[in-house]
Image (cartoon, rainbow, N blue to C red; front, side, top):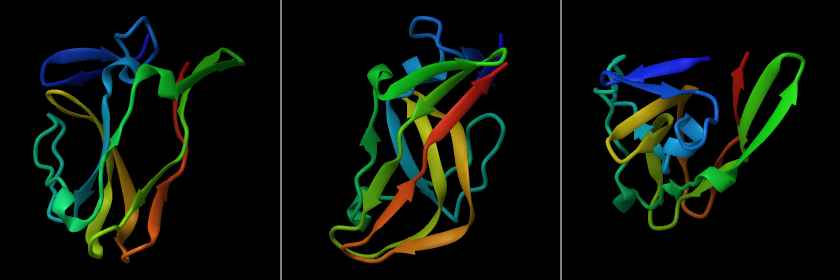
Length: 130
């Protein structure tokens, strides 16, 4: 079994009822370039929703499970973030979070800006459990 330890709490990466990341994560949010992520889940700076974007609320039903060659895959379909009120600047990446904070970081290779009316799409998130 594969686990991620977060703030002293072990979270299963696989779907075991609602114990894994797919069953635990409730939000998909963006973070800024001012972030300095630490292994303990601290150090990130959340992108303000006033900047013209809204985080995604996600649930267990948003994940798809498939099995192939001794591995199980948990897949979250692509999600698009739209700049609605103003340009959304200094985006460093996205993260999956639960009620207590971030569970998994999804960094971009370089920072980006979403211009008003445009979208940034986070391609499929796929967790592999061997």
